[in-house]
Image 1 (cartoon, rainbow, N blue to C red):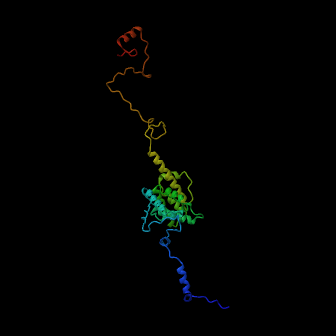
Image 2: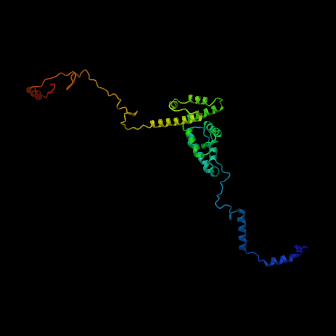
Image 3: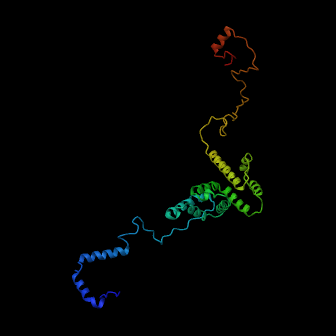
Length: 289
């Protein structure tokens, strides 16, 4: 079947010219509306892809690098505040709890960094991952518990690093850790069962150290009012020796001296003697003025 011939450009030019003459020219208002639509579509102002999406911050604006924490207790609040500022600035990045934990871990140096790396190693060797490496609140609680006393935390972190590099068995690091503990902590550990792992002993020592620190803080804030409890340390009223004033040599006579041991029995006075002492203003007992 032969194709039907069609008129192309050289032969239908007259028909095209006739159609252009029949179409009216656009008015000035239509031209302005068309220009506005072209500009709006080019800048995506008329139909944005996501009406609720906010504009991003200036890419040239950058926060300074967060300070690193080396275990100094006076810098702990500043470090936590800077971390929360980063989390608030980039909520899309840090809405995942693991990202927060990793970000804090990368800003630890010294004993805190050793402590964090030991947690990762112990969690990898365990059957189940540690909760403090998956949950942000648990991680912060563990961080505060270990570094409330920086001296003990530094000792524990340094001992972890040495025990990890040593070739001893599991019992030898526990013995060495106990030897290096404070005497106050050891006095409490003597009345408890010693755990079988090094991490359990470190956790137990941390809890005891925190309890001792709390007790010392309470003992320093003693109340100033008097307490009648005789067993309190600050109640010394029952144990103070009252000073005794000795008589001088000039005091040769003590009126009304009554002694149940040395005094002698005296007979009753007669009526005349009583009257005489009464008139002279003398003592009815000893007769002295």
